[in-house]
Amino acid sequence: MVEGAVIAARVRRTLARPGPGLARMLGNEVAKGLLSLWGNRTTLVPELAVLVAYYILVQFLIGGGRLVQALFAPTLLGFASYALAYIVTLKMVAGTLEEMNAGTLEQAHLSPLPAWMLSLGRLGAAMIEAAGLTAVVGAGLILALAIHLAYRWDALLPVALTILDVAGFGLLLGGLALRVASIGAILHVIQSVVFLLNGSIVPVSLYPGWLQVVARLSPTTLGVEVTRSILVQGQSLATLWSDHILVWLLVHSAAMLVVGGAVYQWNIRRALREGRLRPR
Image (cartoon, rainbow, N blue to C red):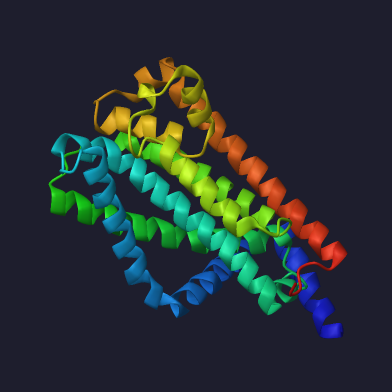
């Protein structure tokens, strides 16, 4: 008891003075998550193979039974964003449920570390894995299919905002996993909707007006549109800002991150109070 109190006091002092100590604790949580993922590294090769095969299959479908070179670049950006969101949401939901059923989720939240730090550690590990797999798949497809993109530094801004958008989306679904028993089935439906609406198959501008509004409210769609405008159509950030689409991407990413984080933390605290983090 005394040792636990001493550790808790040290943690509170570290949190009161943000600096290297706080960064080290957060880094330790991310590293713990990555070590857990590395323990299941045998699943990485099948994940890569499925993503590549899925992209090629989609190209055959939208190309009418053949591969159309002109469709590669516009659809790759949407598919890459979908893959990022797919892996992050899957890891957040599946990881949360696995730890809950194993009884380790409740134990972890009985530590002196605050719930937000534990959730950021879990999210950070999922984001690193998803970004790495997506980068490998994207680079491999670009080289194998000779996909041409206008590589520009200003595209890093919408890419970063899309990553934040996906992070908030992952937290949102991870929080729902603590409350909704059928989250597995719901997750696959939501992932399919994201894939259909974010520009992985056809540009959002080709949808009916009402469906364009729905599509742009879903995760990754605005990020795909802005990134595609820069890397495929050659537009500038200034033009996209004046057209307000970059503004809406910024607002959407910030809102998704805030809402997702709030939902995850609220459900964690409620589950701790009600004793629902243990195996069901």
